Amino acid sequence: MTALRDVSVTFHRLSGAVQALRDVTLTLPEEGIVGLLGRNGAGKSTLMRVLSGNELRHTGTVDVARPVMYAGDRWPHAYDQTLQSLMGHLARVHPAFDAVRAAELLAMFKVDPRQFSLSRGQVSAGLVSLALASRAPVTLLDEPTLGMDAPSRALLARAIVEEQAEQPRCIVLSTHLIDESADLFERVLVLHHGRLRVDADAEELLSVHVRVEGAAADIEALPTVGPIERLGNHATAIVRRDDAPAHLRTRPVRLQELATVLTEGALP
Image (tube, rainbow, N blue to C red):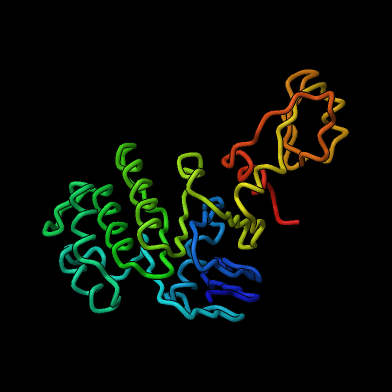
């Protein structure tokens, strides 16, 4: 089991205390792809670092009974050695590390693991390749597409699906490119100012919300999720499906727009 109970993290800086996580409680699934969403500064990287044991300045309970692999910008020593050297280190730390699979993934991204000078996108592709090849039961990918072009991001999505089919595990993917990754997610976690705002099945979360359009007066009378967008006497907003009147036009909601409205404004 991998779980957090009432976990908070506060960073003390010269400008004052910053609470990165606030009483977060969650349990990760044994298997499945989990989308970790939220705006910059929401606490996504801090949450992943707590789960991986790289952030010890927390209160609450962290219960991690399975090996965890964390890949992100702050991966220790990832930038002062070659990927080939890093592969050797990972093989010692993660008994299930598959060097053959790592080489396959690196070749797919056209990344030479012997080189020191790599572009930002190549570094991202290299680190995520090694993370997936670790075959860790909990694999945390923190903004793995930084610097990647669109074809490389498509390759990564395919690699994640292939890995999950071949070696099922819990993969947590943090990304701002939500629409590109939405089809991967089986579960969605949304952080807002350090609080866990949403923990839900991805398909169910989308199915219970719709965007309604119509006369502004009709929209304003509804219990909306997020702000109302007005254009003259016309308006649109997201509501729960059960709250959508039959006479108003509706359309499905994309995960990107739902995550956006759920993380607007200050905490209640």
